Amino acid sequence: MQDPRHDKLARVLVEHSIRIQPGERVLIEAFDIPDEMVVALMRTVREAGGIPLVSLKHQKVQRELIRAGDASVETAGDYEAYRMKQVQAYIGLRGSHNVMELSDVPSGAMNHYEQNWLKPVHFDIRVPDTKWVVLRWPLPSMAQQANMSTEAFEDFYFDVCTMDYGRMANAIEPLKELMERTDQVHITGEGTDLTFSIKDIPAIPCAGDANIPDGECFTAPVKESVSGVIRFNTPTLYHGVTFTDIQLRIENGRIVEANANNGDRLNEILDADEGARYIGEFAIGFNPYITDPMLDILFDEKIAGSFHFTPGQAYEEADNGNRSSVHWDMVMIQTPGYGGGDIIFDGEVIRRDGIFVVEALKGLNPEALKG
Image 1 (cartoon, rainbow, N blue to C red):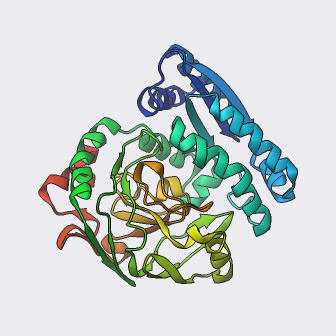
Image 2: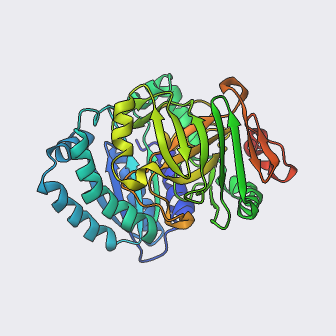
Image 3: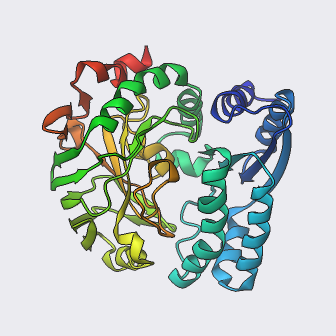
């Protein structure tokens, strides 16, 4: 029997996130996703007048392709780049039976994959040229990361992913306008004292139109304006490796010192190219249903009372000129249980200990977004 939650989520993705128009081709790329959800998406795309194309993938197979580090990666990258150019929209559903599946892929092979497949297909084509949305899928491994039973996590997942994103979209507008008027940003917290400029760089509100779940507004720092230190209090998973207690020291925009539980691997990633040591994104998170990290960036970067700071590639919509094969969202939570902290725009505190204190922004606080 078809789960009605699949149909509801499919409608959010097709009707709200990518807003399919008649005749548009939609690539549905599914990693370890139940066939029932893929079918629900196909039917919903057709009901909207779109043309669904489907690519079914498995993380274990993908690992084997990547770890080879040979011409098969380049050939696959060329093929997928051609295919991505033929579609107007993209839905990426990413499940994983083992979040550590890529942990033993050599750094050289991973860099080869990023340069010849990931970057040309997704950063160079999909992100700037298609309407797109990506989301994780609630497999038991994800429930384990969240320290929840599979049933409880599925209920949480569908509540978060199908919340009232229209309400959120309205509440974000004052933050977008404030960010676009702001020059200097100052962020404080435990182990953190960071300053930078966001002057003249667009702010992009995100309310379910590119990621599900959603709840952030992002921009980018002026590339060489970042100075200070930051200590991220949220674990992060990158290339199948878990990093904790990441601490960065930044001078004139460049990360000059980086430490973590696995400092050598951290610095290997930051040395992938010159742009990996500069910051490509600054974003403020406010999804009211997500309050604690679960080692999944599409959830963790939306935590209410958090912000993320991203070494590597800048998005085209908020472009500070930084280019890299790396895009690594690192999250700091500023709610009292995580040490608190302030976000200050041009000398005025806009958020303290995870709660917006400026009147125009209070609609983004958890009680208001939950209605």
